[in-house]
Length: 568
Image (cartoon, rainbow, N blue to C red):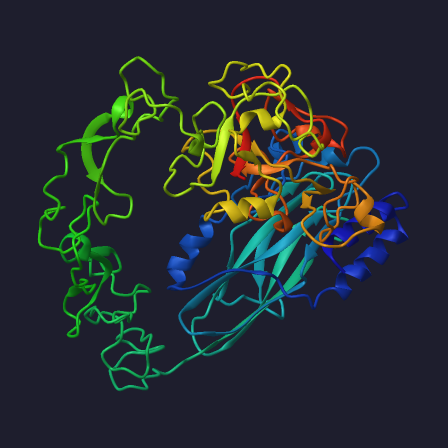
């Protein structure tokens, strides 16, 4: 029965006193076979063990301010002078010890072992243990094999403490004493059986080096290798040669990082033991140098950097006309060459009579070229006419809503471009942003047919822009690019793919650029769409209706894109 359980029982019995106390005595006797908990085990001499016991922490719950403690003074004969005033009035002290038999077992001769007894006062008055002493099993003189750290103590009501008992395995002999508790407990004098025995162990040396368990020369942590034992030289070999619990501890830097090689051939490794075990080496094999790249690194491992690019850092010029810019040659991003560290200014519309090459085509004051594709004579996307001769991204504004309506004829004389005469878009529709001979691209397929790169090239680096086409769909980012008709394909919110375009479908707006959300795969090569009510776009873009955005979308000012125009 656990100590706590007996304490609770003793507390209930305390109120009835008398015969209840006799029942508790019987319960304590029944627990005498329990064995104490082991708290420490070391091999020392008996005198060393006595010193160790003197320093043990008793951790007793004694109220040192109680008047009863004043009586805890040991007189000359080893007894505590008992203050009988503690017994005035009702109540009693009740000593409980756990376990009642403390067995240390058989221990090698020379070993010292300490265990503890748990002590409790289960009564309602302070308990005075006036003397702890060892007696022989028949009441005679005890052996010298046991000692304790306490001689007397006082416990308040329901208080607990610990008594440490130490066993000294002196020789190959069984020992049995009794630890006697003399106190004012209702139980009277209480004896706890203490037992233990010694055994002589012979040296165990399996590898012939004179070391091993119980050997006079010391321990051996590897009985298969004669070179490994206590005090052996520590070799760098991944073993604990001297049996001190550490491996290769004498080799400073072992396992730390190291490098070998030059430039980009440098490789990081670890310091490891050499083959003889008497030193360290860096486990790293330098790489072989490759071709020199333009990247501020020594790729060919010859100690020089970017030496194959002599123009690096010199002056360079890009562009023509008013677009011309100058800077220095720098490495390309892929390291395969150099590039001028500046971009030309974006070309504008040609202005007649200013003697400048405004559109940066090498000509001055020439008539606007219809091949540009934008009504105002300037492209904002797909700017390289040689790469994209049949498609253009054109900035501008319009106030007549919709991109899927039947209105295809310009309504403001193509003046809605950002360099046009009607930059607010009043009276304009989407067609007013495209040049004569061009139209707003009708679908994702129309874009694919006119652009070898799909939507790639529609925006300039760093620009935020969305360029709309006359493509819509069934909702949920799906484009009507299939052949299915009728049924769910007539619903502007069915969210299915494979439908053919029809007059019922105007959900969401699709196009190219860097502004907006990513559409479904059915829209390829288109890479952006408006989302519900154009909430993925920015003002001046505006649309409404939730499922009919393509029929009412407008752009009431400049900035953030326009339309994609395809050559007729």
